[in-house]
Image: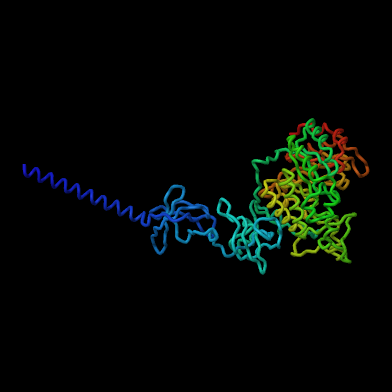
Length: 562
């Protein structure tokens, strides 16, 4: 009996010892992993790269998260192989992170001290506006002073930079971490081999110096671009008759309007931006601001997708206000080209004016898309420039084609930020296998813009273009079929091509033999585009916006193209 009791006592004692040992082991584990269990305030993941490694509690690599992510930091520290780890909580899970990758200050989330320019870039005056301070070319080194905000993937939106004696802001997406990387050119799918064949005989720059890195094309949930835009053009004066155009659109398969915001010497409304940047444009406005805004609203309320057209580098009124921006003759006076004055496409104040006007039109008037026309230098002026007869005021020593592409990037960056799209009008010639003398090269513009709108008006071509035996404006289907082949070849070589939405001739020819462009001729143009797979839609070019003409050819709009 005594022995039995003794055995039971020993057994209980052993169980007690085991329990005590288990408690000690458990407490040791808890103390090891929850040492300093008190939380600190919220902290941020910090790095000089966009992603940061997290580790499990046994120091094994676990996952990557974007820098700038908010985490709960604990006072627990542990040193392993000379690396100090901090315990954090992220998404309700515990991890370890290297001490160098955690900070309590938003300002120190990024650790870059220098970056290099991969794509020649605009330098902005501040982190919020579209105001331009300067320009920096590919391969240049920038000192990093700070940043405005982080994107969800940990990348920086705009860096605060110092370049020589300039302090400003540059978009982070155009910068890389090394000089070597910045000097590389995009060469996927053999694009550079193809581009090298594009000549520079016309003096506007070499295609190999243009930027072909992929450019993100946005899709805005609250601003859906139709897959096929079927649009008529409405000029600054005709917009007063908006009700009649809406009625026409409803009955004739039209789903979009191109409405002038600013045509050369025909500003559409007395814009506050014009008042600030170009009082002469403001004083010559053809419509009252509130009336114009109401016209556009009527169109939108009717389900019309509205595109605002801005003539960019052909603006006599802006030159009148800012002669220093003009292309000048040998005497230093503004140079008149075909009766109009052109501010130089190299001049950044001109960029800023047109983009600020576009931003106003999106925010205050409600446009779905901004279309920039005359995004080029004057045509047929190359000899004058070479002879020193005109001065383009090339401040940053750019090539023409490079300046044009850089403007498109600037415009897209600023207008995308407002949730609207950007289209660029180009001459039909820009689809050819060379960089045009006025700086338009199809592939370079299409790679950046959301929409590229060629203007292959049949009566703008030579009589037997592309080896066509007939006079080309008498056979628009043949002409646009041949032209479309060139467009397709350019679209195929670039990583992020724009939607192709083409201007079609909707006026009778200005050349002999004269041809009436009736519904059949207009339909022929559209069908040729669609047969080439260019199904982004069309826009009707008739400078007078003549509603009678539109009605006469309305069958071409009602027809369904496949």
